[in-house]
Figure 1 (cartoon, rainbow, N blue to C red):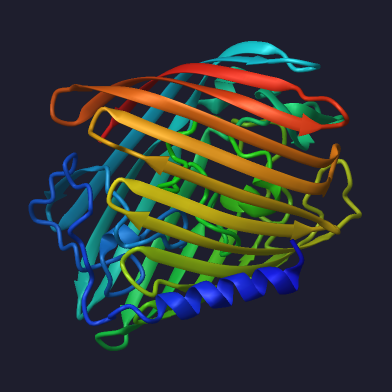
Figure 2: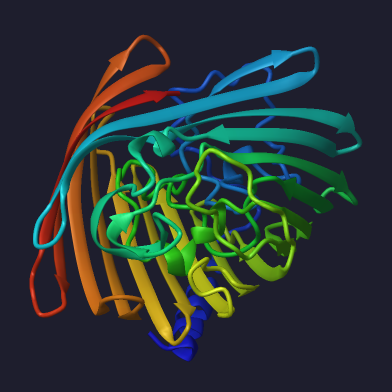
Length: 402
């Protein structure tokens, strides 16, 4: 998809969405069944006076109608929030792939405190079990990027996340009822570049494998050194980040050097409770360890939509004369079943030239107590690239604390 075409699509979606009544937020479809919201102010987000359900990974936004899964408690004036999701996965990939058992997921906690007059201070921490699967990550046909040993790139495998995915602080200063300034600092953290990270999108958080277009869209969601400043006006947000362009090295247990040598900017708009749109630009200095002299300019645009049990994301990313397009969705017909589908297309990608992928799947959840579920799920990958039609499959058990 060309940049001009993508801009037309986003502008058209924004124009249609602007026709909705902005006088109030429709919260009737929000899934709050797993959250104890006693004592919580649902009208206060991290970055401004909007519903806290809008907050997503880093400083990104999602639709206000996105489901909110978290445990909440108030202690000494601090509002505490916790969430965890872990998957035990059996992965089998054909035609040059591999088979492997692994555990992936994340556990996160947040503490926020009102400072009065609309100001807020918040701290967030997030951990991942991924490093224990080994430096080479897990088999995933058509995936590429980073390195496993510092000498060769990963091909047909997805790299693991670092043990510490985020240690960040946010301060929000209210200028008026609709305007605010904020600063965000993380070591590691997530700069203002790309859509909500795939681990946190309402349309993809239940899919156990990473998108093969991850390095075009949201690979900066773990950055060792990031500082973001932004301005929120009503349902608009403009932010600029200075961050470390180099992706995390192959040692997933350590903390990398903070260089603050790269820049990004992002404009976000939530026209109503069901839509969240963003467009972003980034200059990344020496992002790849194996090509230290190569810098990268990246463009992304995305639209997220949530309405009751249905969530979807359309996203586009461009870098180094190559493009990635992603369309994913989840549908929950009831409290037990989750159906999902992710479709992707890469044009002139790093290793495979043009490549396409479709991955349907489903999960059946069994509740345990008030705040925990265990799910049984499976997905199947239909891959098309390199003149062959490889395929893959995953069977998994999920534990989620909500």
